[in-house]
Length: 152
Figure (cartoon, one colour):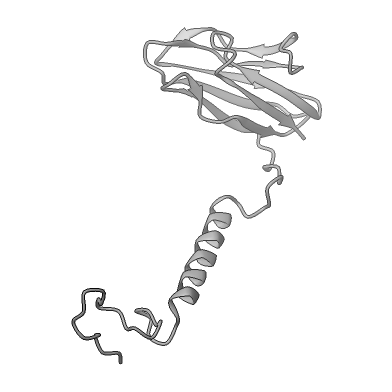
C-alpha cells in the first residue's frame, strides 16, 4: 500500500514514485493499456473488418432522410440479381425529399425512384440490380444527400 506524500504545494493524493492508482502498475503502462482497450472496443463496434471491408449484402434495407437535409447513411450494399426492398423514410418534417438510384456517378440514368414528398412519408422500392456500383441521391437536394450503392 502507498502512503500519501507529505503536505507540499505540489503534492497530491498520488505516490511520488511514478505508480498510479493501480498499485505497482506505472501510470504510463496504465495509460497504454487503457488506450489499447479503447482501440479494440472501437474496432469491435465498427465490425472489426478493416478499413475497406464491405458490408454483407442485404435483401431489405432502410434509408432515412433525417433533419439537417441528409441521409442517415452514405453507403448501402445489397444482394445482386435478386429482388431487394429498399424502404425510404422521410423524417425531415416539412421538407420534401425522395430517394433515387442511378447507374452512374454523374446521375444521368435514373433506374429507380420514389415520389418527392414532404415528411412524414414512407415508400418502398423493389429493385433488382446486376453486380456493380450504383449511386443514390435526393433529387431535391443532390449536393447534400447522396451515397453509393453496391450490388454484389
